[in-house]
Length: 97
Image (cartoon, rainbow, N blue to C red; front, side, top):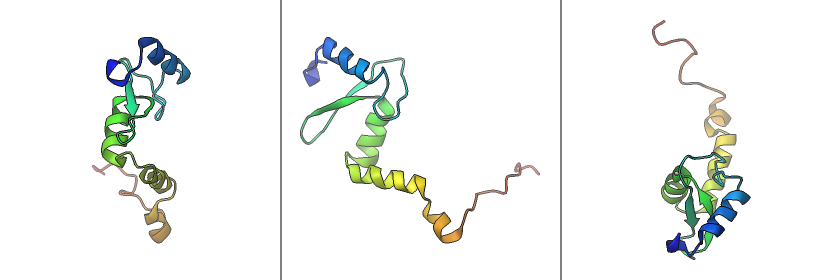
């Protein structure tokens, strides 16, 4: 907590405000949630699980909200379906059939 200037009381207050869950995926974790901060401004943003903090924001989107908005649009409206219509990678049968 010393790294981000949060006291344990402040961490617990923020954790309670988030319902004990990651602010993005809303999942609970056995361990502590990470204190997420903006790498440009150093502003504390909230508490995140390791997956959302380290993979989704840091590596995937690199803290760019426009990338996350496009990702949500992509998941809600597949470009391939717009061009080709609904198509699946297999016909629903087990591979052994």
